[in-house]
Image 1 (tube, one colour):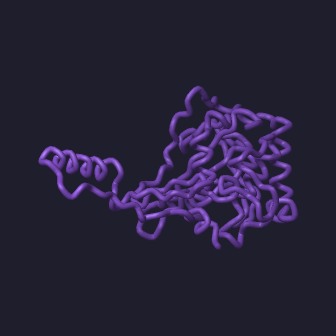
Image 2: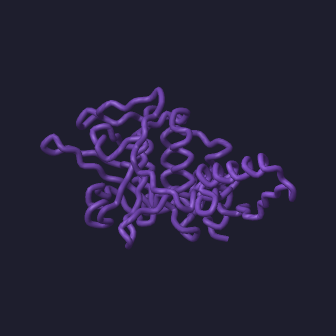
Image 3: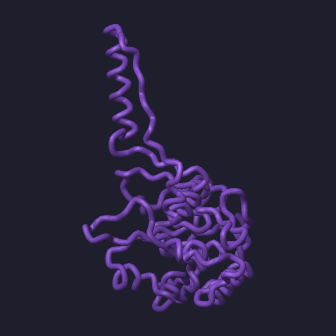
Length: 256
């Protein structure tokens, strides 16, 4: 079963709303108001929620993509000094990414490409090297025992966004470039053939190098599927995937 199907497992459309056969005029009015409220708030016909259980994903059929950064309560990100040295934890994370971007560490963490892509699995591994610890929602206990928040891009995005404060993350937008740091997580939305974007992100990578020239920062990333090191961020959203959008999850500390 594909990961997408596993994540949507348990979704049910069998709910039935039953009303008494005989209703007073007041009851009828209340019923109509209740139905209108459901339609307005829940988007009943086109916005039913998928219920994936432990997958940590909740997508609406008619939801718009969310690739604009939102403030993280109680956490802020300052501009990173140009050519700032890496911390020991950042260096561990980058060393791991540059060791396993091409030669997978599949014996320990599996290879999720058969399920649609290994990019999230790879980024999670680098976060583990940074100093994060597994928990009940974010884990990989072997090739066939990983959570969706660890290995599936939409689930990872939902998990990071919903728990940003607790995880020490600040969500940054494309205009916050001066605040990006090595080891940060970059989520991408590709522009589709109709000129729009899906509700869920399509890809995730980790920043493996930031260099400067003429006061301008050049951001590069490591990834699986496609397997790359030092992949240029600007090239990715212009040449490789024209019109792509992204957000960056900036790590304010080395532990989750």
